[in-house]
Length: 204
Image (cartoon, rainbow, N blue to C red; front, side, top):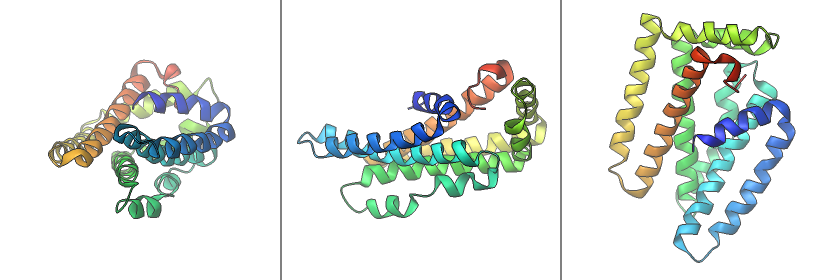
């Protein structure tokens, strides 16, 4: 589940409208699969529908609102009422996937805010292309300072603890746990890329 994030990021940068419209294909395929007689494909279809919500939220934010970090979580949470409503019926897995993804996003934003990285966000994203890698690397270095590192480490530990607890709560819990762990993996890969190879991070 890490790969789609790094596929979406450069796509949104190059063609945000196309990336956003791709949501319709994800939803259509998900609905078709969910109607399959096989329970396995039903689950895959539901997951795809849940993923489409996260995909569209990401496309909308990174395509048009990327210079406004305060809008990140509200834009990503646009489908929250639908996800909550789906928990009680056939779209339960879709709702769980979306809500777990949203929780990971919220945790990331809180960590960025408390560590002081969020205030650098607009500077990095509005910088000329040739200056952006250096600014991105500098922003990533902020995370390695003692206090921000404690904040990020604490948030990661809380998420890992939650994921470990959820893993023992059946299929739905395991799905939420994997989704949360994927968020941590993406954040870790992005931080590593920002420090080691900011030109190729693909998320600016």
